[in-house]
Amino acid sequence: MDQALRRSLKEVRTHGSELLPFGTYWYSYGPGEHVIDCHWHDEAEIFYCAQGCTLFQVDTDYFLVQAGEAVYIDAGDIHAAHAYGDEGCSFFSFVFNTNLLASAQYDAVQENIIIPLQERRATLPRWIKPQEDYELELLDHITAIKKCCEDRRTGYEGAVKGQLYLMLSGLHSRNVACSRTSSNRSESSKIERLKTVIQYIQEHYGQPIRLSELAALIPMSEGQFCRFFKSMTRQTPVDYINSYRIRQAVELLRRTDRKISDIALEVGYDNISYFIRVFRKTMNCSPSEFRKKLQDSMEGPE
Image (tube, rainbow, N blue to C red; front, side, top):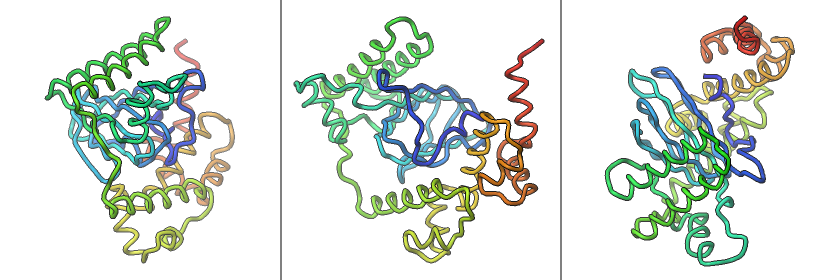
């Protein structure tokens, strides 16, 4: 579960490198576990559900993604996920900068395929299910990308890039690429308001954050704000702030040997008992137990 806590709201993590601008991630969650908090990043993402069922959110849309289905998230889109049902879920995530596909010089591929993708004029379907022929082809390419990234054989980077080109080429040849350039003005306003709030939380999580401060950013009354925030994220503002703070605490526990009381203060908790209680609720263990598990896993079996 701790891997999921690396996700931030407006993500500042680097996915891949300048030479290889993509990141690959595998996750597994138990029934009812919170999978991914609302966040966004400047890269596109392909989410492939390998097992179970996931309630997935992109901007203001929600859908149940079953095993064998995928979701495409355009750069900048807010998204979140929750395990759904009694089975739990596991999934593969491929996060990539669309400049990975850019041509070294301006050519027909750049003009007809890559720029329309980046401008959302001709992009992938949001929810990819094994129904239509073109969807089955897309899922075949996605599972091929997944296998390439698992095996990491010499030259796999070229195979991954090639699969992405084939996905886009197939959409254009069948004339089924999706346009998401225009959106409802009211929905766009909601999304921008939410981004304003969660960016403020990210920047100020180490300090006391009052509901009145968050509500004033939009602006709304506190009551309106709480209803708005929960309708957009399925979490209360307080639950969301706690979740973000605990993610930061996990990273500090992972990377440093600082005192737990110091970590609690740094992530915004001046009451150590409350910090431990919130941590246990989120992680199903105390901070000291979590640190011990990390140490044991590093030492390995004797």
